[in-house]
Length: 171
Image (cartoon, rainbow, N blue to C red):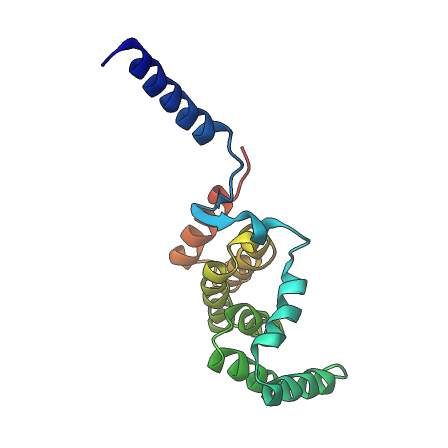
């Protein structure tokens, strides 16, 4: 290899290294998962995601959900809440399902209802990784705190709550 070829090869290598370190990223790691930057843009919150999830339903289900939610604005009705939970479950939209399971748990205040809500919130993190911190701090931790208050001797609940608190504490 003559000196000109070496210089050309070295220049190409330096260009590749420069592109690797200085090129704009199209994705980033959030909670251990790679998320595209397009998903990071804009004001993403649980409430906006809940509204956007309505678009994932069929027109018929959208009408039913809107009617059920309107009916619930006056008072809590267990049958209506169970219907909403069922619709979100059938359509495989765990965040909306989790919110209604949490409402049910608040009304009944039983360990099993809080556990169902917590499980649904865990499931929703996979689809809403950008919302992970908000889901954990505003919904999962309170769910496990409520379970711990209802059953103070349940070590599994205490361990799960402790892990959530440790994993979500900023250094």
